[in-house]
Length: 317
Image 1 (cartoon, rainbow, N blue to C red):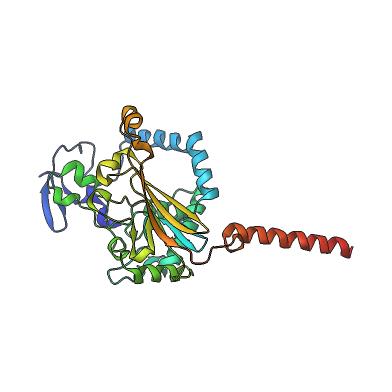
Image 2 (cartoon, rainbow, N blue to C red):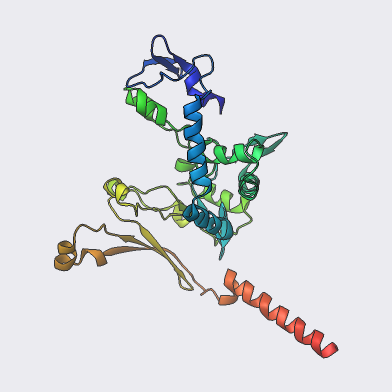
């Protein structure tokens, strides 16, 4: 991530910044406390501010409850009822191959890369006292690294938005996954990577708002890809044109429901806009799925097997 060490690329005498082979003038700068020879070094007062922020984060009761919930219930991907669910993307190269990342002396891609990310993420959470190790570095990388499945971009251009007037520098290049996911063969390849049946499975993709207002379809790749983030947050609704999706899944098949955004109480009472929704049939089961064929069914069967074993053991005694 060395190319994003941006303070090192500033000409402090000319107040200019060089990136992508081009030089740009900087505006609204606030670098009076930056040492050009050691731009990463903090003043004593700045160090105190960072320590107070760190203390607040580490001792936040609400944040701790949220993180404990994530660690207990969450994962970077989930295989559920024959479908693959994940947030963000599966890093791919332009040819549709799983993008490789070298971590220490080994290269990882696809499912193995996500497994490694999750291992280091959980290790860092379990060892908060270790702050200068690979696991801590990996948490930062997962947030903004180009091979991170959660980030899914080549760079985060917050610095450029603050200090450069040229909007061309604001662009954040997305991972090729986001245009390749329209291709059914790519989706089938991803399902196989995670040991899923590509004939019956679907990919349920979160985090990437669908621009319905521009005619974008949340169901892609001949039904193999379903993007369920339609912009539930009000901040996204002017871009997406809707207020999010609900995915419905039962033994008959899978449907996606698009919700209309909430405007006002008067609009709801007069026009009933809050109950308006559009349903899309994603997939229809030709043979209804039985409970025993679901993840919950597998757990029930395991419990039944355990109870039978206990009964046999009791009678043997």
